[in-house]
Structure formats: structure tokens, C-alpha cells
Amino acid sequence: MPPLYETTMAVHIRLARMGTKKTPFYRIVVADHRSPRGGRFLERLGTFDPRSSELRVEGARVLHWLSKGAQPSETVAILLKNAKITAPAATPAA
Image (cartoon, rainbow, N blue to C red):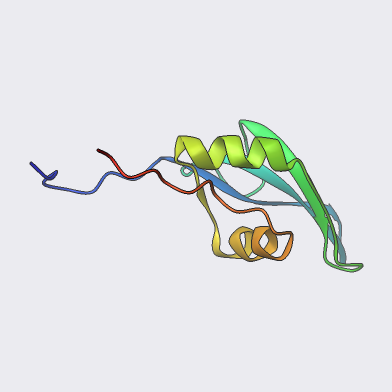
């Protein structure tokens, strides 16, 4: 029987802004969706510097959180796609 409503994970992979005024850089973090943008997070997965387009990410940990059902934000999804880090393929149920 299919579920009556779709459940979504309350954990998101998103950017948290750091740096000073006019020199931003971002941490890629796993956070509860109710936490503020620069607030509390569960785990830091990497960094992104938009001024030099430098992306550092722990691919194994990202895949771990994606396999647990964490939802990446639109921007993080694009960054992960460019870094060629994708969610593991779902295996069909027998």
C-alpha cells in the first residue's frame, strides 16, 4: 500500500556563509532544515570559495548523507554535480 503522504527528510545539505563583508566563502554543511543559514549544523562536509571557484568536499561523507536521505539545496546539488559526486543508484525492490 503506498503512503498517504510523502515524507521528506528534515536534514538538508546546504551552504553556510562565512567570511567577512564582501569576501564571502561558504561551508557545505548538513543541518536540520529548521536551523538558520549560518546556525547550528550536524556535520561540516567541505568548503566553497566563490571568488576563486574552489570547491573542497569530503565525497564519502556526502554520499553517506545522501544515502541516509538528506536533501541537497539547489546550489549544493549543482556544486556536487560539477564535482561529479552523485547519489548512489537506488536498487529496485524485489
